[in-house]
Image (cartoon, rainbow, N blue to C red; front, top):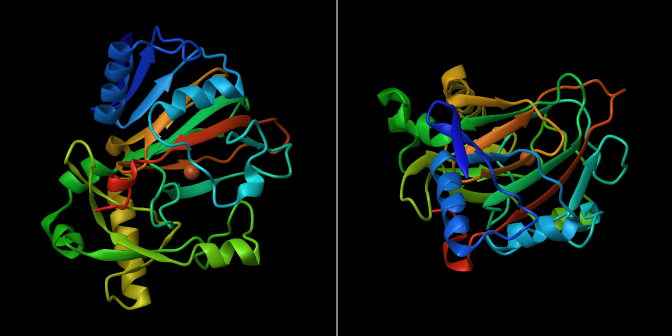
Length: 274
Ligand SMILES: [Fe+2]
């Protein structure tokens, strides 16, 4: 296993690993440790059946089930995300967010496997939220420390990729999480930022809350804290939703883009953000 760090102490490229063949326990632990340390891990050159993708992810935690169960279009819990597929439709730009932050026990790791990639655009960008927290100016730090925020699946001004049904909406009312989150294994702190989902910070009036959210987002997305991934078919990326947020850049709708996605939860005792 060869590792190359691609951004400022964040995002690691891991070569020499074939995810279709289960690594032994020592190799697997090394891989998991590198992923948690660097928050985003890229495994290039993979060729995986759905079952192999699931087998890999399930070794890292209980397999993620999307609240919108209709989005599971592949084998069992693999979501097919394509601009040709009506169910899990992927179009254009997707703004900064942290996966499933609007649920009581959000997904820990997301695993995305690139199959068809547009020639231009459609990059996935990651912002390091642990570095964001560590570098907050005192003025902002004082405003987030010990604070809580409301995370909602539907926030005015942010259209969901696939609309919620009434039944789904009832299942996921907005939730409150700490705005500064402690990593369940490493103990480090990170800003739990998801601008697409945070609808209110603390007791702030809406306009002040949005203003603070914009300031935090601006700090988090400075180039030195961002890794931009330009996809090559066969890339598998795995990211830690406790420590990064991500977005997708715009791409030409005339080009095909197709990814498979799965993910895994934390064990139940650690799965509520703290
Ligand atoms: Fe996402």
